[in-house]
Length: 382
Ligand SMILES: Nc1nc2c(ncn2[C@@H]2O[C@H](COP(=O)(O)OP(=O)(O)O)[C@@H](O)[C@H]2O)c(=O)[nH]1
Ligand SMILES: [Mg+2]
Image (cartoon, rainbow, N blue to C red; front, side):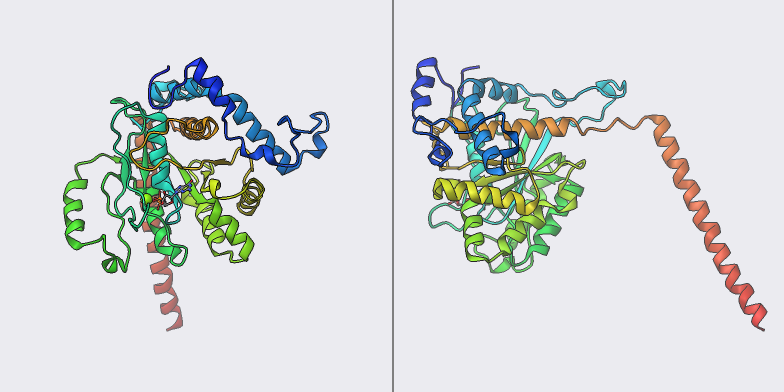
């Protein structure tokens, strides 16, 4: 498929290959021709740093040829496409939702809304795009309502992305409560994300709240299938440098929050703002944060710098970043499709109801036994 905002002809591709922003190749492990100086036979010397450099090389190698193909897979994706049959259960017997829901979570200003815009630019078709509002420039805009985005802009899209309100590392508990609600009760377009003290904020008013409560009930409620945690790599670098571990601990708490791990799958960590760092700091900060939260430095995280401002299509988008973003979404859908459960059949419902009734009866008799034993005890004392 060669249509859309980012599609390359053969000539374009070779031209872009030359201008790939292969920033990591300035590392000392590379020679002047851009080759990684490492003997592949010597696997014992494969340090996390070398693994990461090899991963970046993999992305650069696959991106020019593989991007259009992967993007096409996402555009034509229907829920359950990546489901694999196990245990002799047919696909029709699985409880597969009409659309996979990917939730973006992270601290305020980490780049969640910018990531949505990047998805529109990279995955959406050409034309006017309903970009998400970011806090760019002088605006201190905060996403106060959940926003559902159909980033591939297909009528029958098989997935959607939810932009959420960011968490504040000084008052994490309130943000975590929100995350718990989103993950367990589901999410809906325009759902308000108010927290105590919001009245003081300029972009909040009680009028907005009541208006949103009326309108958001019209939208479909969706259960979250997968989460991406978005984090600012420049801030992470600064935190490690200064020794102020608060933002790092907040990211770790959010990432390891049990409810955000759907079907025992960890979220994917998306690292933004990497463009603000030099190559060494960018590599080292990624290695450190991955170690800090206990995930693989290669498959657990993606470095996606969101340079796209709202409304502008990236004519010369960096193909490696575009591919990394596409792969992150692809991986989210694959993991979501592998965690569907079989539908509850009539027999299962009957068994469930019978077991509930049995539990109630058992509790009732337990209560009676407790009551009479107390009664009996009092009599004996007399
Ligand atoms: N340089 C750079 N700026 C970014 C990147 N991602 C986001 N930003 C900027 O960071 C600010 C906050 O981004 P926003 O998407 O509103 O964060 P949110 O609060 O998580 O939704 C905005 O000014 C963005 O333009 C990035 O990867 N690189
Ligand atoms: Mg936002």
